Length: 338
Picture 1: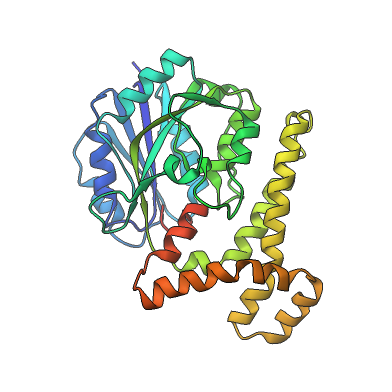
Picture 2: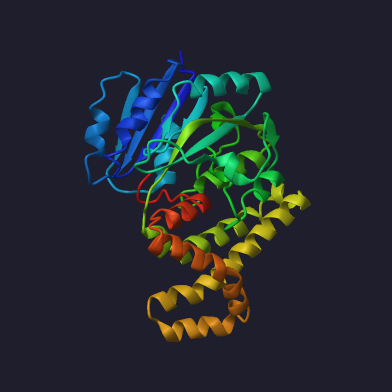
């Protein structure tokens, strides 16, 4: 008989964190689960830690090379046999009752996907500093159904607060199989967001529960800032491709929401095409990009207060997480460490 839930954990060089993730899955009050860990070519002891667990519900799959988080998740999806699919990043963890609560609510609402709120916790902290819904600015105090337009509108790049695209839904496997939904392996940023969008445009009934059962760890990964141009370009490509789908074209409100988000990303891309070369000392490149972007100075001035505020907090007040939190809330990077 197939398990009720397949929990899939893609992992890459997270030897210090993965044991907690695995323990939180195996210690769920819902016992009828399988746990599939896909190590994506780690160079540390991640595989050794994962294989140290003797629970028969755990299966460890090892990629011989690093293929990316989307490919790792797809390999787990292909192997999964559960009625429901639950995603768990290897540096995060669940409350013990998470799966039992969400499966029960999913069945009550006839959901195809359902997500809880997230506890936001800084690496090394003993307690969360907030939750996703609290930081989102959205007033959600009961279970609500999410449509694709609302979902897109709550995922504007750089918007103050958080985004519902960071949620970690559980998915009805039958729905994913029926519509052939897998992660886009050409996308290495915001892969959760685009996967959820595939489900929504295929008619998924998606519900949000305003109760946190998932601990979402923010970690300092400097590569986030170094690769911002690549990330923004990749988002533009993915967004343009997504808008070409017939199901999207037939929804004018969705096209407007996606187009607005894309315009915001393009504005940020133009800004960072000047800023990044300046930081690298490539003045000629920066000047060339500045000439292409006549709005750079007005954009810079509009950002100036926040720039100064963050630097005061970081250098004078000693808040070393001010940059990490803001970047992680926009998009938590899952390329090098899942």
